[in-house]
Image 1 (cartoon, helix red, strand yellow):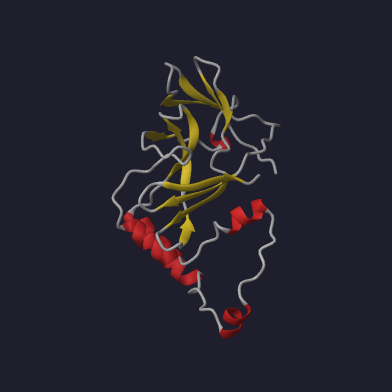
Image 2 (cartoon, rainbow, N blue to C red):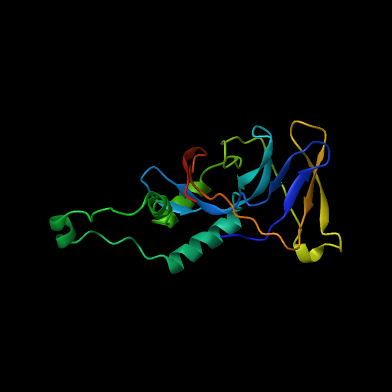
Length: 195
């Protein structure tokens, strides 16, 4: 899979990266194994010193909307019936990358979102788990002038440069996709590359 995206460069050093870090499977989880889809955005981590995917914690009203949507679209998990208890679990012969994706499917997301609403914490870097981050807001490609260049106000960690985003016209990038599981308390439980 390849996608069109921005290329982010530093104005001082030779740092360059395609803005594909938010692609992949990201989920919040709780202590009982329930999962909900994690909201994320592009950002800069001081500890990683690069552009990364960062957690985007929803506001109270956004969280209430997410819970209402989950209640309307996700049915309650079914209890195991007599035959499944008698016959045992199905044989798991899926390849490893598919197992990583299957482990990210939302399971009882309402309880995870309610547990998340009780947490009062800062968002974190989805690569290293640091909270020393800043969001990197890029405009849409159509909102730019002919040059398709956008100078951000975000400093590149480790040097005195500023990050500049370019939107190439005929280039596509293939992201390395990760399955990242984050506990509602704010720690990364697992991170696996699946593609």
